[in-house]
Length: 340
Image (cartoon, rainbow, N blue to C red; front, side, top):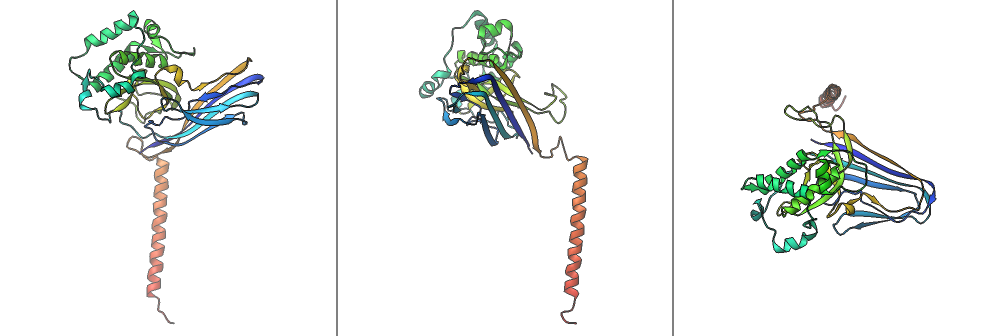
């Protein structure tokens, strides 16, 4: 039982005159470790006269490097993909025995490989207060999975989500002082909290697809009121045996089938969806994202519609009539004498 959706993401810059466009890097292709099945993917770019080279950055993310040989009055990137929204159990992983309980220590070799994801910045008073609050209130014996869930939940409760159109990411101190931030601000804060606890963490940028639930929840929020998609940011923590585990502090939940990672990096600046320069000009930006259901299997919470049942019933009756005709014809052929 599954839902298949088509996602369309359009980014268009219009310039007031033909301008030189520097090489651009586009990080809008699902990452190799994406758990949501991507059935098809395409990216279209304007101006049509351009060169494209697919590369991988040091973290293994897919990058489309675009080169524009001539001045242009526009730059447009359109991504289309089809995703199979089969439900993913975010707890479907194993943990190495030595890392089952928190705290744990990475092996020497693994720690060397995780160095970029363990680097910490100087902690301010607000950050230290939150860190010590979490540290001192945790049970003495706690599984690593429970620890990650608890820290993610506490950060969700502490930082209110807000739409912030300013570029860049807030510092941890700024986010905690305001007690609010965008998804990227909360994700970056969680990265540093986990790193201070000795757990390797990275910044994840990608698509978030949220679909309306078939039935409303009886004991909690039911989620979005309409099918929705947008660019989003969350955190991934590295646990031996399990690998990278997605944590979304904006919702307080673990990453599931609706989280489609595009770029996962040690710092947010390396995960920007589109980077590049153009000559000085007046520019306008048009941005649009849509998600459309293109296939739905019947399920317990959303069975066949009345129209579908009528169609099935009509097909069954037609098949029965055709079968009866064939049986009658067969009996006639058998009973008919070979000679007059």
